[in-house]
Image (cartoon, rainbow, N blue to C red; front, side, top):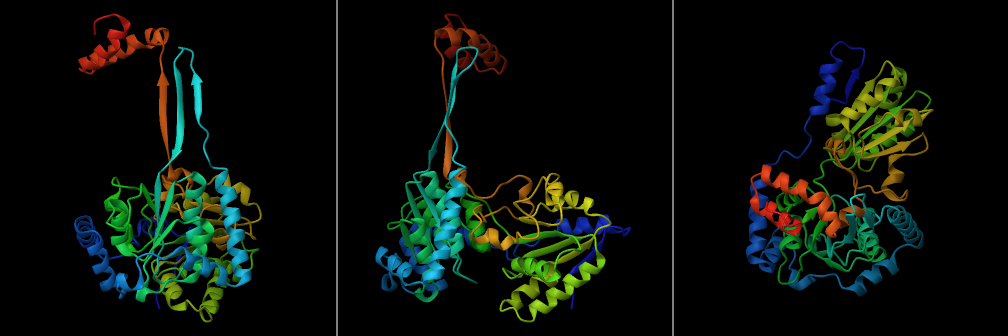
Length: 434
């Protein structure tokens, strides 16, 4: 049995081997670009006819028979019918997510500078947002909350949710979460065709301004191809976690943390960095022990064997530089003084500080968003926020005195760039010739 990868920072080949780990590609192997382009073109051309055809082929049901939309009464019934404790958990999560994201709402600005020019910016929400909810390996009501609530906090006017419903069935927890989050429409449409429908609109489904939410390789590729027609949150890849842990941790805790991502998908990645070789061995043993009883063992084992890694360091002081190169989606700092390491971390989607802060708590009830950049994109991207559902409009105002102060410089630059009409539009207001 191969894997997980074992590295030691004192090994002469460590730099080379770690670079290979950083550069390893874990995206799906399928060349889906051509298929997605064909699906997108069909939906743009044929609208609802294409959606019905793809749903029959991929989800094995007739939308005219099962219903294109999930009616509000069915969503309310789903919420009323779930276990009381589970409903309380969803509502607790929703409250915490709503509170955290409300603090992200940006303020408008309006000032007058030293030249007398009025300058500012005004923030407004998009008119409509689309939310994609997967319906494949598992149902994720937590993702419904994480994607829908920031849109509502931002003030998006309409929130349309699409989700594949194999055989016409939909998980009631997903419907319950949609009801709690305030989703306006739920459509039984999945795959790349759903993203195309949200982008272009069909006879039944209205266009949206931004599409968010996780999905498989086809969904991710559709978002990539349609960016510009609509806004997107990100093109997400396989889940990943890096755990930095000292030898004072319980190996079983850290093993569970690593497996919490491995169980998502065979292409997920879990990496342990520690300065204690004996602890590394203990964690490896604990992973094997837990896999023996894990309901998701097939997926988690494939992930751990193919993409997992255990890295022994000479010192935990080495960890921040290494984690920055990985730029992981999730970074746990399970050490005695996490703040000291955290101060040196530059690139991570979300950081979990201390031994009692497992990544999994962030997936559900902590408050910060669990939709995070993967595949080293944390070097330049951030997790989902209210800003993904808002846009900023700048404004400025010059009176006669203000244009007199700054206008000559604009005329000079327009002349230097060979754009005479630009210069003339300013010079005429100055009473001069451009």
